[in-house]
Image (cartoon, rainbow, N blue to C red; front, side, top):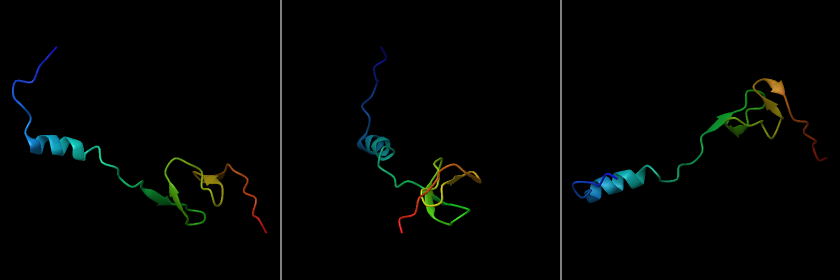
Length: 61
């Protein structure tokens, strides 16, 4: 198995660790109702995904 020839500096270690930091999810806007929705899921407020209705949403009145 390969072994590093030289020790990694602290800056290299911190740069590597920084890429693993938590990042907030990117939210997109639903074209139907303009609600903030994470990508690749159906809109929880109107039930549409990629322009078609996929969920039946019952409003509590």
